Image (cartoon, one colour):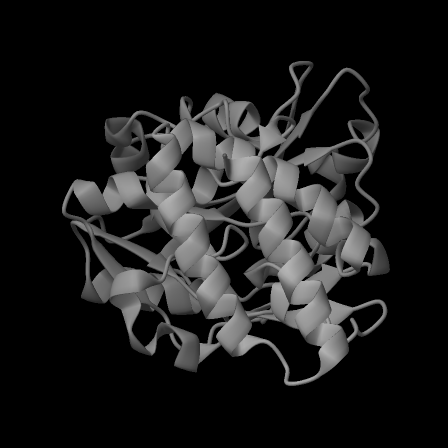
Length: 289
């Protein structure tokens, strides 16, 4: 491992982002020590371009470098791959989103963990939620982890838990060896799950998954991403992802039934919550078939 580690913080975003400037300004304030260097790499994607003038590197003077890129092709996975192709193999990538707030030692803690586990590993931390409006307790258990948050206790059994897309990292060489992100998945498509797909491939390459405790990021969750309409609309993308990753219909159905039983057991013990849970399960199973 080189004495100085090169860290690339990578964010792919769309012109519709309302939070990217706040996120950038927050990340640019992270602590940096002399044994590593940090570059925040932004890739705006989509037919409309909005942020080129706002992210001129010359306007940002500090310990964290800034790079802005634009591609007209829509899709988060495509934007991530665009940047990764230009990274050196020994550069470490921290993946995050355009709507997060990090702690000052966020990168320092990654570097400390990297130095303890320099090869054959990928890394990640937890996440907490900053809600615009607290979601109803009747549907909260049906929200994705990105709208619920995960902390240290969630990863006590790391074998079955993948990192959320807003707080994980890996050497560039391993992402390239795994075949880059699947451009049929993720924002900009009608499917979810590009980070989960990549992390599963890294596991299949026998990389060890390392959790970094006490290194949470805060994810802003607007009200339209924590209500019942969001839950139902997201199901379309979830099932389309399943059809890509699990083309066998009956295996998908078996998975959905098992999930349904788990959700019923986890549902709050009141009629309204149970009603939402049963509707959710019914929709998932019908779409999966």
